[in-house]
Structures are given as C-alpha cells and as structure tokens.
Amino acid sequence: FLSENPIDESLKAVIARRNCEYALICVRIVLGFFDAYFDRNQMDPDFTLEAPLPPSTPMERQMSTRRPTSVGTPSSKSLIEGGIGAGSAGGDFEFADGSVDMERSMSDGGEDSDSDEETDTSKPTVRMWWDDILSSLRINLTDLYQLKPKVLLAEHFSVMYSAIEVITGACQEQDVDILMLETPDMLRDLAGSFDQSDESGGEPKAANELSDRREDLLAQFVEQLTVSDDLAEAINSDKDNMVESMEKIPSMSEDDTKGDLRFEPLLKKLVRHTRSNLVTDSGFKTLDVDCTKSTKWFIQLFRRMIEKRWGMTIDERDEDGGEEEDEKAEPVQMMLNVCGVTELCLDLIAVGINGDLVKECVKLLVALLFKEGGATKVQMTIFKHLSTANTQLFFEEMVSSLNIMEEIFKYDELPGFVAGSEGSFAVDAGKSTDAGGEKPDDGDEDDEEDDPLAELPIVSENLICVRFLQLMCEGHYGPNQDIMREQ
Image 1 (cartoon, rainbow, N blue to C red):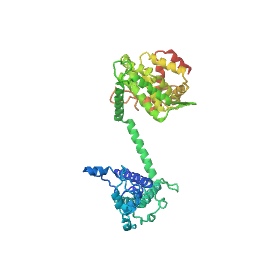
Image 2 (cartoon, rainbow, N blue to C red):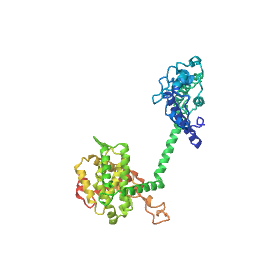
Image 3 (cartoon, rainbow, N blue to C red):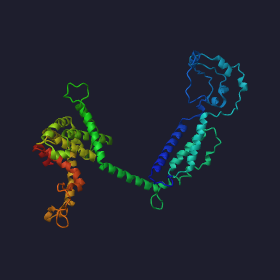
Image 4 (tube, helix red, strand yellow):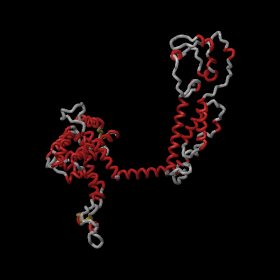
C-alpha cells in the first residue's frame, strides 16, 4: 500500500508506516539476540517454559535439593544430539552436598556398564520445540524480505538479510540455501527509490514531498496551539495549581509549622543552581538548553505568584491596579527580592541568553517593581547590582531591544499614521473615515479603537523593556535615573 501511495496521510497509511517501523525494530532485536547470545550447543533439551510442579513427598523434596554437579556431566552438544548417556562415560554424578549417586553413575556411564557398546554415536539430532520457532522466524523474515517494499532503505534490507543469515545458521534445516535470495546490493536501486531525488535534476521524489507535507502540517499544528484560547487557559490553570502547591510550603517566619522544608531556602537553591550553570564568555553569556527550559518555567511561576495576589496580569495591572493590589503582593515581592531572584533576572538579561528567557526575566522584574510611588527596595537591589557587578552585557541587551524598536519607527510606516511635512505625523484619514468622509458605523460606538501595536509585533514584544526601565526609576528614584542617563 505504501509503495503505491507513499505520501498518503490517511489512517490506513499511518498504521502501515507504524507496522513497518515495528517490523524493523523486531528484526533488529532478533538479529542482535542471535548474533550475540544464541548458542545451540548450550540449549538444554529438558528446558521448558512451564514451571515444574512442586515436590509432593518428603523424599521428592529431599531429592530436589540434591542437584547433580558432576565433573563427568556430558557436554551440551552431546545432550542435544545423543541423549543423556551419550557423553557421560567416565564421570560420577555428584550432588550439591558432595555425595555421589553411584547407582546412576554405574547405570549411565560407570565402568561396569556396557551401555557404551550399545551407544549409537550416529544418532540424528533431535528436533526440539524451539526449532519450530526458529523455522517460523526464518520463513516470515524471508517473506518480508522478498516483498521488497519500496518504503525501506538499503540499510533496512541489509539488516533483514543479516537476520535471515543468523537464524538460518541456528536452525537445523541447514539445507536452506540463503544465497538464493537477492543480496542487499542487488536491491539498492529499489530500496528507498521514492526517497531519492531525480539524478537528472527533476522534481524531488515522493519521500521529499511527504517530508515537506509533514513539516507544513507540523507548522500549522504549532500555530493552532499558539492561538488556542483553550490551551492557554489550560496552561494558566496548571500554573495556578503549581503556585498553590508552592504556597503550601511553609516560610521561615512560620515557627509553629512542623517539618524541615522551608520556601526561602528552596528558592535560594534554585537561584544558585541557575547561576552555577551560567557561563560568561568574552562578549556573551550562555546557559545550557535544559537549564534554560527549567529556569524559564520557574521564572514564569514566580511572576504568576505575584499576579495571583493581584488578581490580574502585569498588563492589566498597568491600568487597573492600585494600593490594594500593592499590599496583597508585597510579601511575595519582598521574599523573591531577598532570596536573589532580582539579581538572577538581571544576570540573565544578557547577550547570548535565549530571547524567550530574557523576556520572561524582564516581565518578572516588571512584576517585582509594580508599586504606587515605586518599589524602593527592589529599585535599591537593582541599583546595587548594576553598579557593583560586571553588567555590561545587561546594558548591551537592553540597547539591542531599544534599537530594534527604533529601526521600526525610523524606516517603516506606522499603522494609523501618515507622514506629514518636515518629518511630522498625522492621523491617517483612511483609518478614521470612509470614502464619503464620514466615520464608518461599526454598530457599536463603545468599541475600543484598534491597537496600532497589533500591526507591529516587534515593537509590541519589546515594549515591555521600556516599561521595565521606566519602573526602575518610578517615584523619581535618583540612583537608577543616573545610571540610565549615563548609559
């Protein structure tokens, strides 16, 4: 089916591809086992998959604890090919406790036994129950190989060919001539034929088309996730649940709480862990991928803790919040500030750090700084850190964000405005009136005006940096104003 429909996206095609992948995994497992572990000479003919019955009488229980361990035990090959007595001559059957079973020794291979004269050394190999399994494996693998499915690559045919070889070697049916099969080299032109580009420079084959189609579908899926309100609500709900769990951890100020775990030491350990993974090189900083993901996650949780106390997001707080919200969030803000989160965010806002993590740190700093008249203690922490530590990369990152927005305002047309004389701007009449010179009737006079920043995503994403710099100096905090002016 896949050979004829290589780019089919139906459920039948998906199942077929999964079956192919499963078959190849099984082939690799079979090849690895028979190539590295299987030894026919080590197979015990008495082996069974069924558990033996427990001894029912005292004598049987006594005998079950006395297992023969004789030096004269026959080889595994003789056990399989000639039975128990074929290779046991000259050896006594000794039990684990050191005693010797003389009766068995004499009857099976002792000096007084004449069984050696009657032993038929040319007795054919006994066919065991596992030989049927080996034969079935070989037949099914051979059938799959001879199907020559075009969806397989030359490497896959090579693996199957090797697996058929080792299984045939393990079977009793040594007369099967594996060389009658086409070798993987013979199938190289067929294997993966739809996965190769036309050597003449023509259109790509079906596999490339399938790959492109999958990439397009993945991009569409990711885009749908990005704009999904339901997913955003579910993510926020998970964050709220996590915040509630974190808030249940007692703080250092709760003396009457039992247990050794406290939130502040845990918070400091998280900060130290991230800083220990932060590497400063000449001109940039780096943070490994795993640490970047975990740091972004708990930075978002810290901001969520503050927003939960406010009852609103940082965007809503800018317009609707007041002193009541300040009082609710202040304990959380002060705890985060004292435990080093403010300094960590300043260290992570640097050239070389993942852009999404930088933006999350800026947003958390905005949440920490929100307070009517200015969050003086947080502002003092920022001033101390920026004036004593090596923070050149912080300022370079801030300048880069400002430059990105400046380029837009310098050279691009602003939505809702038209250029006037001498570099001035005027409201675009086309945005506010219709062709007859009257305002269009939208049916609702209370509708809010369109946000021009919605058409400027670069500005919209980086504008939070301007808000952060402004809040650093909120309440006319002179030290930070001086730093900003000098920089």
